[in-house]
Image (cartoon, rainbow, N blue to C red):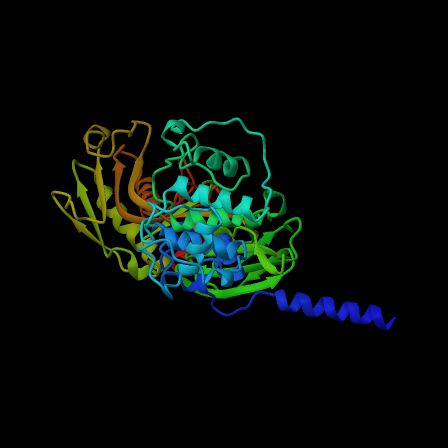
Length: 493
């Protein structure tokens, strides 16, 4: 029994030792790798942090697209294969361009005496020359052979389209690593053998060597639900083989909530800012060969809602507004009566009065003989023949008594407590027309109030026959609670 308890305690101690630190790591400090994220994050964490085979070019840079020098390539592979270089300190240096006492001298001498490289000539190694892709494959393959490592072989007979450009000395090594799943081409069909191999691709090769595909963790799947203006729920099923899942929340480059370890399932974030895009990052990890192996980080963008609506009275799933509050509504409604339309001016004055009282805004009517191009809200009154030739009203038909057109842009999404979602638009300018059909005054008042409602963001129509915003013929001229509340709620968030 005492042995069993001791075994459990030792296992717990081992697990605790493998739990990743919450403090900033080397990879977190690199400022030049954002374009390679999240695809390469788990690779860099394993090669730089867990294995220590590669370092940054400074405390804050990794130089992912830079080439790697021949001397550094040899030294890196010596680290990977855990080569004991001490025995070669006393060996004669065969290369005149490898300085005595340099940080790579012993590694280059080992590679020379063990048949990994013969240099650029009988007396030079070219330590500062950048390594070609084909040369790095040859170095890597020869290291494997020397250290007794048998690489997997998927039996592929694939040949790169630029195969003829691969040097005869290097060709067998390139395909050996390709069939082992360690290196891939620069495209689906090309290898580009003489191009310098980039540091980020060296890191990926080392990762592929250390972690065969069968041992890697899958990328987590993220879904979102219950999105409101200040909260949302994130769900992620367990990744097979993972011990722990980490989650992080960011707003742009700002960390809102740092990496938090938890089991698979879901997490609710609250206290968020309305109409703001957040990114959720989820990764899985497990202990692997004495280190921590991460999955590729999954990233999902989630935008909070503009606000939460209490009700919805329109037959369309869109709504607009001029701004956050009634004070953002333009204060001038320009009206132009093109031809004799005796009720147009009075109807627009009535409409403005109704919506001012409903929304708490301060619109005033201004009659003009020519509509200003800078007018935010402008309405025309006239006959069908007068109005149908105006810009923007080509869709007007003689059966219609009013029409409103918009310059608008998507602002975000509104939600309800029942998790229903509606698209919100920012209004930029509005043009409307009231068609004079020579009918009763109260009908014109209704049409003017109805169309101005559209101009304030009331898109679609009510299904209640006693509402001003109902479609079709009606003599209702006074806004109802349905009319008011539907629009008032987007101007009071």
